[in-house]
Length: 292
Ligand code: BEZ
Ligand code: FE
Image (tube, rainbow, N blue to C red; front, side, top):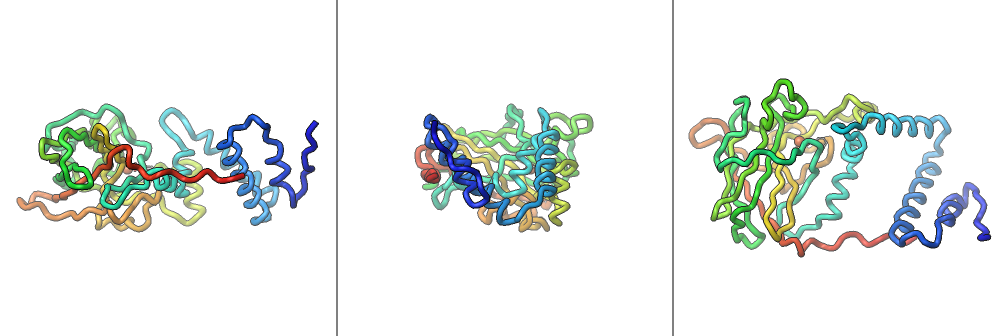
């Protein structure tokens, strides 16, 4: 029988981590040892009371109970704590000049209609029209004909079609567009507006307790793909949004803030926006596994 160290306040981390079996994979061993070490550090550093720990467990229980087929409260928690953006950052270290990625969010729907370039995706006809156009290319500027742009955003009231299936047309503010022979694409949408992330659950309560609002800076979502290239999940942000520097999920990056100008025909707005993709093989290496 192995003799394990007995538990004490001072040796709590060692006592727990020593119990891992010999067959545990090196990665699992390293990650779990780190999780246990940091978790114990939190309890010690905050000198947590039993009531506080019970409240934390209740919060996690409520978070789990809020989850359903269409609501993922744990992802929302990860988003508002900046963890989703951190995981994106360390897994997508792109070279200079490549379009930066940001959070996917919970409202992407596979299979949006594919439209000819120039189509207006305001199926309800509401909102200030905004023409978005540009090029998809590699970082050297060579066009990527046939690249697919999957686009989605909220309606003019700040809700995705899937949040209001009874009052928005299906596929409202969603569409897929293919870059032409010069890599060019174009579509018409509404100028985006800020909107709150779902805040009627435990994560919303947590934000309120932290004195934080639930608003996402106004944005349009894109997934841009081209065979042999690393797909980019990204947004463009409205530079005039009052929440630009306080996005609830930390998704804003300088390089993703667009320039929105009055359209030349004075009918609404216009944005010129290019995407630069990198070959799938050139993603920078991921993080080094922590040692136990
Ligand atoms: C969104 O932009 O759709 C989104 C992202 C993270 C959490 C909630 C919504
Ligand atoms: Fe969004």
